[in-house]
Length: 248
Image (cartoon, rainbow, N blue to C red):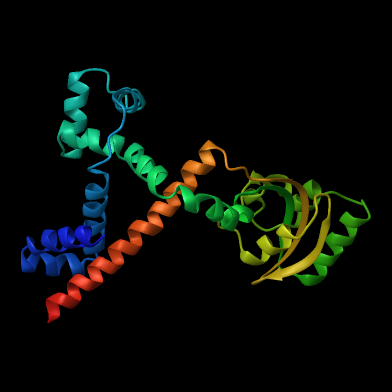
């Protein structure tokens, strides 16, 4: 990493002082360093020619680039060359290959760390503002007097977020931590007593829980997350050290 750090410092030294100042004021310096580091890291990564060509072909089909004129137009819109476009298209392949070569040992432990957030949940949910109404709904559900579909339409705020009072199957990323903790310790089929989250009273019933597996899509996603943590740490450390050195 020392060599990479030196390259980063040399790269930043080539930037005009006023330009560097503007980049800092506009919070663009870290993005620049990040792009430079990624470029340097993947520069030694080669991918098989057939994968390279397939990735570009798929991009062309997806973006309706059917002939040379279409390609010229998209290059003009993006303001880049064909070589630069191909770099952008194939960059994810190179990053994943780099991750596979360098982060394989971390993958299993990181998967276990993230597993609760990767499991897919299907559950019923109703949100109301009033505690008494929440318990009235709960008792009507518990006695099978009514169901989530009817009660959600009649009582739940923002019911369009959870049509018919249903969520999933999805993972819990972005969900409120209190809701996540309740669902993690709950068994499928269990109706959870009302509990408060900020200004809301929540009634939940867990329907299904699908355990996450370390399959190819999950592996790819987690390796990308590990890479992002890795590269962001480098960016922060290198940028901070460079600016400190400049003040001396």
